[in-house]
Length: 159
Image 1 (spheres, rainbow, N blue to C red):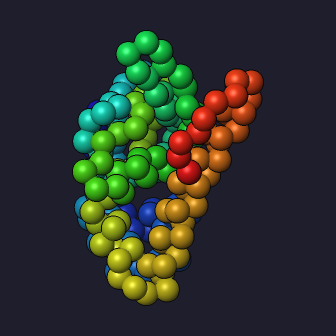
Image 2: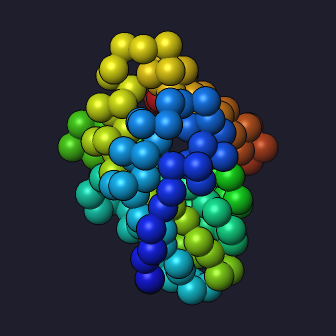
């Protein structure tokens, strides 16, 4: 996995950060890193500490959840998608593993910097919080739809 610099204008093109003031984008960009992953390379391992949000610039990432006896593909994400939102929790660990399904480029941003920005109290901060919640809600809705498609009735304990 190789790394290179991230720019504020580049972050401004991501839906999550669109419209945020330039100084905040510059501060996030300074802390961010660009990562290049080879096909099949692991970005996140389920159960490991989660400390960054990722935006996919190009390529694809497959998210897989597993337990001792089985695994399932949870989602396949592409350019513009955000992953790692579960890192926003206290003492967060990755809920899934994330593996490149092609040559992939992501921007990684430390979640603490995103939380600090979101806690700022400005209208832009509120918009950032709403966007983060929208990502989580969309992922939960996708999980709900996947459960319903499986055709088995059961108990859903989250959401």
